[in-house]
Length: 90
Image 1 (spheres, rainbow, N blue to C red):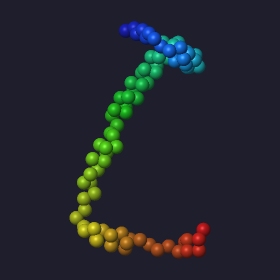
Image 2: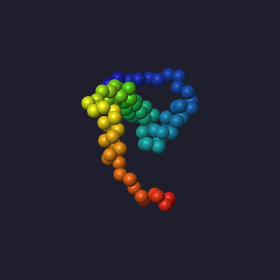
Image 3: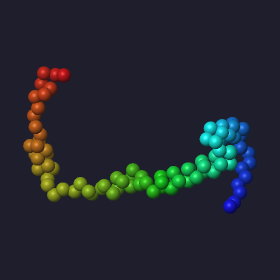
Image 4: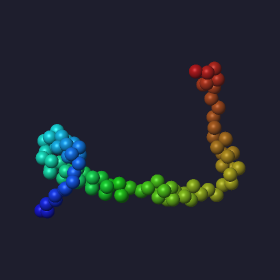
């Protein structure tokens, strides 16, 4: 198993690590290892997700329709139902 030594940690960051480790009943080394493992696991998961641009590109063309725009509009209008529920307001 490898060892890792970190030099030049700011006092404030070290204090936060120490406090966090104490709150979770770990040593500072255990806490740092826990945080690194969590970060790497999350990073792997995030990298597997598709970006919004990828999702959009996959959707492009998926709405192709052989009907004309006028035909689609008339079908939408025909499917609408008039409601009297709000004719007198709330």
